Length: 84
Image 1 (cartoon, rainbow, N blue to C red):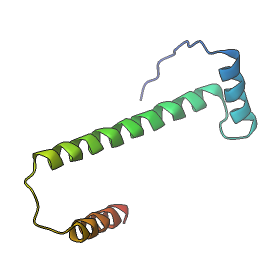
Image 2 (image 1 turned 90 degrees about the vertical axis):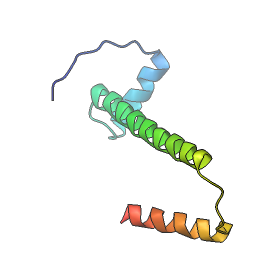
Image 3 (image 1 turned 135 degrees about the horizontal axis):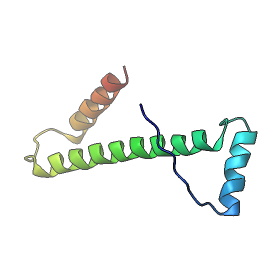
Image 4 (image 1 turned 30 degrees about the vertical axis):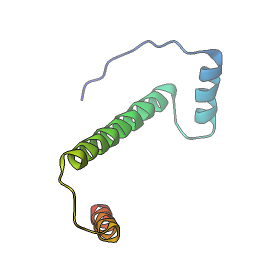
């Protein structure tokens, strides 16, 4: 994987925040902190897109004859299976 050098401008307060995270041992340097932010943003965006797709599928689906309890149990089951 290649790398690209970027120059960014931060406020003093933002710079101090990053330095405090490094001092606390959360990150080893500024670049690691910024890369972590980008990774988390990518993950959050992927989750958002998946949710958006699920909502769209729900809107386009027919009305269900299942009870709310049945739907809830199916959703819980899918969630548990996804985690395993």
